[in-house]
Each structure stands twice: as C-alpha cells, then as structure tokens.
Length: 407
Image (spheres, rainbow, N blue to C red):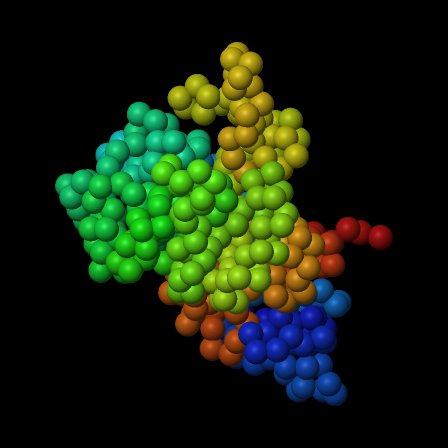
C-alpha cells in the first residue's frame, strides 16, 4: 500500500487542532502528525499539498437510507457498491445503511444483499454495518414507514433477524412503549447491538425503563419523537415524556438531522448546551434522490412518487392533503456539517466531532476510527472553507479526489 503525506493543512487532530500541519499515512494508518515547522524530514510515495484546506477525520453517517438512485431497502448489490463511492464524494468514510419497516423476510433478505455489496466492493469498509429502523415503531409516529408493516417485537422475529444478520447489524430503532420493548432492549444489548429509541410517543417511564435496560441512542430527535404532554387529570399541568429521560441520562447520545425543515434551528444550540460533548451527533437520514438536482422526481417500487425540493423530499400525490408533504431528507453530510456550524455557533473542529468521533464512540468504533490520531485508520476528509470535499481516504486509500480545474 502506497504511503501518503498530506501537508500544509489545518489538521483537526483529536487532541488539538493544528493551524498548519501534516499527516503521514503508511499501511492504511496514521503514523505521524505535527506542525509544519522547519523541515519535518518526512517522505512518502505521494505528497499532497492541501494548500490550507482542512485535514479532518472522515465523516460517519450513522443514519442514511440512500443516496442518488441507491436505496438500501430496494437496491441490488451492484447499485449499493456504486453508492459507496457516491458517499465518498462528500467526505464520508463510514455509514450505517438503514433499512425501512417491511416484512421480516424482506429485511433479512435485503441485509444479505447489503452484506454481499460490502464483501465485494473495494470500498466495502465504508459500510460499518446496518441500522434496522422498524418495524417495531409507534403507529402515530411512523413518519415515512408504512402502517401495514408495523408490529410489536416478537421473539421469533428478533431471533430470526439477529440469527441471520446479527453480525452486520449495529443499531436497531424501536418505540420503547411497545409491549416487549424492555426484553428487546436487553436482547440487543446482550448481542452488542446498540438499542435506539425512536418513532415513539413514549412516556418518561417507558423511556427510562429502556435506558436502564441498555438503550443508548435516539433516532432523529424532534422528528417522530414526542416530548411533553398535558396531564389528563390536571389541566395545564405538563407530564414528562421521552425527551426528559434522554436528556437526563448522560449516557444516551442524540442525533439531529442536519436540515432546518426537520429540526428547527434552536434545537441545535439546545442539544449542544444540554448533552455531554461526546453524545451530540449529526446525521443526514438521507433517502434515494440525495445528491440529485432540484426538482428530480423518483418513483418507489410501491408506486409512491417523490421529488427533490430544497434539500428534502416531498410527496407527489393526487390527494391535495398529501401533495407536497415532507417525506424525508436529501441533505449530504458536508452540508449538514456546514449548517451545524452556523446553527449552533460552533468551530469547524467542534462541529466535525458530531459526525466523526461522537458517532464512532456510540457505535464502539472509536478505537479504530473517528479521529486523527496516531495508530488509527487513515479515514480522512480534506475540505475547504465552503465545506466542498476535495479528497476522501478510506483506510489510507484515496477513494475520491476532486479534479482540479485547469487554468
């Protein structure tokens, strides 16, 4: 494997950012980093002068359903393999491919397709695993999940999914108020899968029971997650809900979609203030169509039609009450990061933690990736002031490099 030396960059190192530094990569890992003072006396097979750009840990998107025309719930292995390189265009070095509520057979079979794509692709390491979102969700809070597929967790279903695909599953989202959810939490945690609360109208008590049983993350907070409610026995007295529980327990991380349509801007500052530094995460929750031009129309296999509009996907439907309804995100992670800096008034270095070291910590990957530190994999994104990604390295291999315009 060729060695690479990145020079003259703003290195977002784990311990302390360097205003002008270098990163040396050998055998896929970071072996040296430091300031560009004097002659560091380093050599490599390839030397890249990034000319003041950020040398950042690669971005980790732990909640994405698709990109361009690639859909993790519907696409075949060849298309998914192509999709890995589409993510790399935006600085992504790890993803969890997210499934959608479907019959158990369909979910299991599709995870096998995703596994084949990972095993056959030269960029297969970009896929850190699978996020199973549904079918154990609250009907009222189902969002874009089809009502006919929702159900309570049953032992046979859980055993089948974990038995046939458990080694690839990293996270499972479910509503903690459903019968059997505490057992589900314990079962997932015992298998090393992160139990995730989401698509829920849970009470404080339901959420707390799940957290005490091992739940450690929240799917797209403030989207399909209801918070406080009025006490039915005492007018105007508010009862705590799931929001209170997940904010109280510091061990629970929270993800926000980097889109002002899904998450009103004050919530970004709020989560930055109330959650511990390592428990704040930004995701895309992106769907097929992400990265496509404004106005692009797409049709799902079930006949639903959507179109891209200002960073989100909206419905095309003959019913005026449905036409134009929000159906999902079409944001890329570098744009989500740019927004986060502005919305929460964060430095680039601090914002990058939300989509690098923090998700790596939640997923248990932080010993190998998620930050620029000697010994870790060289999972790196090089980007400029406007967050345009110029280069992406996955385990020391350049999997995306922006062509330089000729002068």
